[in-house]
Length: 187
Image (cartoon, rainbow, N blue to C red):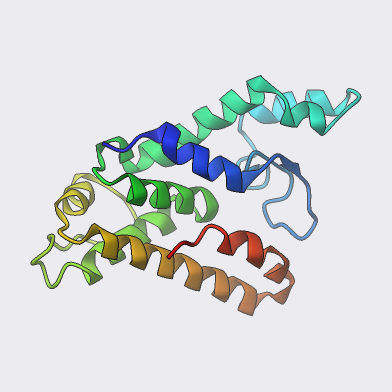
């Protein structure tokens, strides 16, 4: 079964520490948790308190409390939402988790469901799943039964990369993030 700690270690390397880039639509961010997308996250109270002290943002980036809060948030919001503890393939669990963190749960779920369906050789490698953007028992079962999980992983990465390209094409100001986004895409 897939392990959250393994997946989180990979994603945390992409997410970094504190940032507040005006071009980032997520706004103020710490360990990848963006204030604009998650304004009610409990860690923001800690960040706001640390802003009043000397050494910020280094104090926030070094805060063991914030690191634990971020890890717990990620597990609950992104790992558990996909029931990834039930997935047999760690590489796919890592990819789905990282995509959910970066693009949202619904989009990552849709990518997984589409990847299962287009690589299942019309039901021979795994049953079709409904591409509803929600991972339930049917999606996890199809993923675990899939006879060619390496193909599922390749399609997940292809969909992720194509999404980044669309963002940059629609809004060229976002091209500054492309190198970072592409570091998440593996083939």
